[in-house]
Amino acid sequence: MKHLFYGAAALLLFCTACQKQSLTENLSTPASANPLPGSVQYTIPKGGHYATNNNYKPVDLSELRFTVRFDSSCVYQTADQANQWDINKLYGFADNNANHQEFSARIGWRWSEGALRLFAYTYNKAVRDSKELAVIPVGQDVHCAIKVAKDRYVFSVDEKSETMPRLSTTATAQGYQLYPYFGGDEVAPHDVRIWIREEK
Image 1 (cartoon, helix red, strand yellow):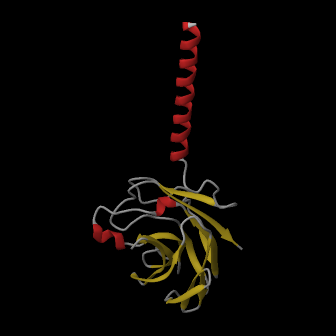
Image 2 (cartoon, helix red, strand yellow; image 1 turned 90 degrees about the horizontal axis):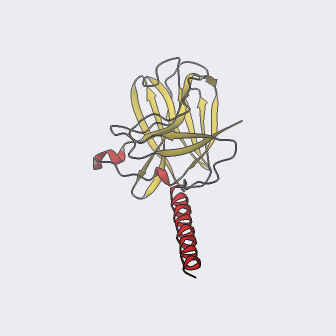
Image 3 (tube, helix red, strand yellow; image 1 turned 90 degrees about the vertical axis):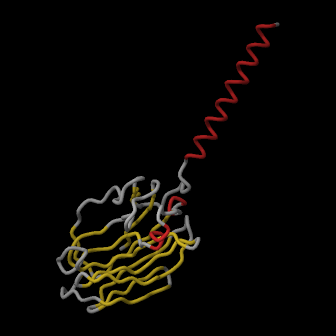
């Protein structure tokens, strides 16, 4: 009888351990368990600025269209409170066959005032400018575009659009692809996951 009791107790302890392990695994699963179909996952590692999958890619285009999804890893608090207002970079391109800190157009993002915000973000002759585009939901697909229209860029987030000046002299955006980047002054406080799918 003792053997039966001890056997049952051991089985109960084993099952409890399995349940705890399963719960721990569930808690560590990314919030976006179903990533954006056909997308590339970019991960900015804790302590870093640059995302994975940021291979050099030349571009020559008149419009860049993409769909993006953020999960809960986009929520962060900077060590220096003033850096909370820094704009992280999402996606875009260098322009005018120049370095991106001279000529470029990107959509930027940050978590501030309890919301995920997207921005138009440009460099023209090394002068940086930005404009808030939209507050977007975490965990949902958002459609974005940057269109080259001669002397201006047209930035779109779903149904909202804003224009920004373009001083590049090339007929199309000519340069290289720009990928997700955290900062600013500070590095990512934890792993940040972003899914992007380019659209035609």
